[in-house]
Image (cartoon, rainbow over all chains, first blue to last red; front, side, top):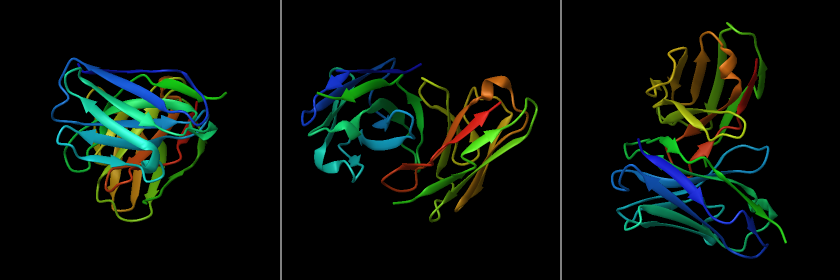
Length: 119
Length: 106
C-alpha cells in the first residue's frame, strides 16, 4: 500500500517562499501523476498542479507564475515551491497520487500539512 | 475553466435516509468526474471515479451516476459514519476543479 507524507515548515513569512516535500513510500514514482491540492481553513479544495516522470507538468493558472513542482526520483519524493506568499496562501496542503488514465483521479492522499503565512 | 456547482451546500438527514447530491458542470466533461468524502481534520477520500465506478473498499451504499454536465452521488441508506463533506472534481481538462462541497449532517 503506497503512502504519502507531506513535510515542511508550518509557518512562512509574507513575501517568502513556501517549500513542501511529499515522500512516497511503498512504491515508485513511475506510472502515476503526482500532485498538490490545498484547502484554506474552513473552505473548499483547490487543485495546485501535478507532474509526471515524463516531465509533463500542469499548474493552476492562478498560481503558475509563482509555482514549481518537481520530482526527485532518487529520494522517491516530489516537491512544491510557491514564491512571494501572502496570507491568502495559508492553507492545509495535501499531496496526492493521480492515476494516468484519461480523466485520472486522485486515489491516494497524504494526511495534509497546515502552512500559515504570517510575520 | 470548468465550473462545478454542487447542490445542496448543506444537507440534514437521518440514519437510513436515501441522500442524493448533485454536481453540475459548466460544460460537458464526459464521465471524467470523481467524488470524495472528507471528514473534519482528515484528507479527502476517493469514493467514486469515472462518474460511476466505486473505489475499492468503499461501501456499496455509495453510488454515482451521470455524464456530460450532470452527475449525482447517492448514499442509499445513510449511516452515522457518513457525516462528512462531499466534493466532486472534474478531471476532463486543466485546470482541474472541485465543486464547492456538500456538508452532510446526520
